[in-house]
Length: 186
Image (cartoon, rainbow, N blue to C red):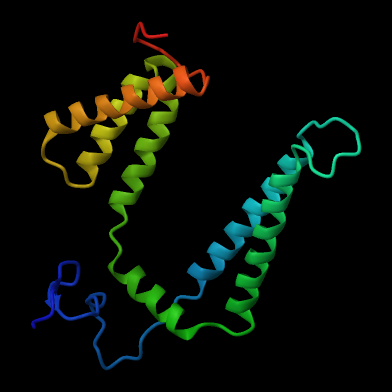
């Protein structure tokens, strides 16, 4: 049995190719910032969830749980896990994780994720004026194209079908109001 070729690395095996100018004789680099940054991001999300939980109105009473219970539990658990993750990356760092993060950093192509984020921002801005169905269809086509699709008609049909199904499911069955925009659907 022969190993599958690694399409990102351009060679057969398990390791991605190093950055240009780096030889295999050099020790592997370690990326500590990535895992620690994710720990800080998780902690920030936990703080945001806990802060938003305080804004939830609830009726005073003797109920053991209320509308704040689930978000409070999620916020506390996320904060605990984020702090444990941060402690793990500082007190007893995982060398294998840092080396893998460095290898992934070396071979990551940032234009595609950046373009998807830009498309997501455009989607959020266009949903009000164009409506959910049109904006979702255009978003689907744009992201499919960014990720390598070369079949725009198929992407357009699939995006439109997904958008209509989701629009009907949310507005008719779940009672969620989505912007109609240019479409006459209500």
